[in-house]
Image (cartoon, helix red, strand yellow):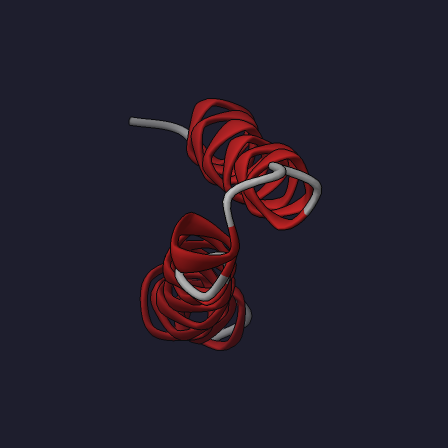
Length: 67
């Protein structure tokens, strides 16, 4: 998987989590409203895991090409 595909997949996961979190927050049922942070947590995990993997996989390769 190249960098563009990787970023696109994580971007879709982050946006989907944000959209779901916002939609659940505006549901009329107060019991369901309290679970709005689950999709937001999914977005946060996708963001952090994406940044870590970009750092480990792609940014470390840049330095090794210069040698």
